[in-house]
Image (cartoon, rainbow, N blue to C red; front, side):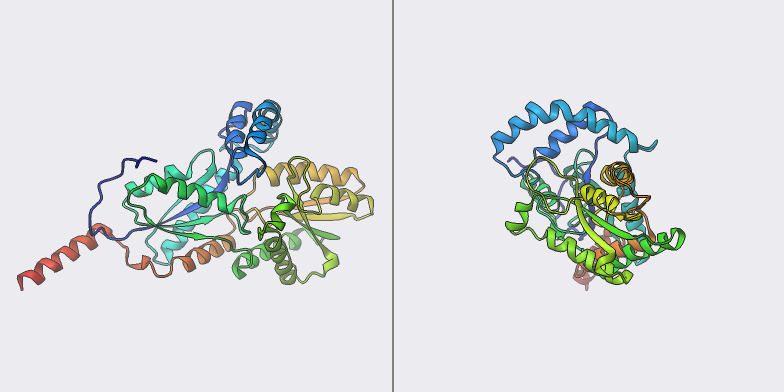
Length: 363
């Protein structure tokens, strides 16, 4: 791969640090055309769909991209806001708040956000960082639980960008924070606040995004990390095993995915006489299609139709101050050793250094 044009490199350049907050992605508009473009990129990722490439591309372009975009566009339209996609809105806001939180702690870093698929791309943000003189980048994903289908794919995009870069910034990656005490505390606080206002349910359902079961047998830690998050959260909330249920949503295709599945579980609960369920999606740090439409609309209807009386959806962490504090703490821990407290003004520091060297030469 040929090297892309880069800003003029100054030897002896003062280190400058940036944080890149990455989320999955979203169509630019809730239209079939925009959704088709988004799905084509998303579902072409071999980290996402691990079946023989040629066979999958035939299925993807011959069937899925012909029929699914219109249906998905209608779903996106049902949760779209005047400002745009909820996922993009929350991710952008989280990046701005993280910048402010770190700034209050005197960390002089630039925080940008990016999407793995669609706009704004990871490559474009890394290009912008290079143009700003950034020499060190910490990549933080919006995925608390590690999965090759999500976290590793973000890393792939960074590595792919680096292949066309001559002077590669020093890179660090946050693999996961599924059991970080501050993340768990933020989740627990959001649930407790909701229960204080609305009372408690018969059952708390913790719904995580699903992945094919074979990924578990191939060594992906996602399944274990989801259950650890659920166990730590239930302990923090003082719940017994009978008071909560872990499920997995968003199944695609006919292969066996991680079980139990969310909607069938809710239907079974409704039929069994469970009157009220509260559903939380701990694997999503921002509300999006999978939470607002799949859970709060489709799963709600399924539970109530099966005989349930009350369905409560507990929103994602979004811009919750305790969550932003947790995100800041996770980020700060991974910045250790980069002396970001000293990066006040790279140009001023460089000028001061040159002046000191000149003074030393004169003496």
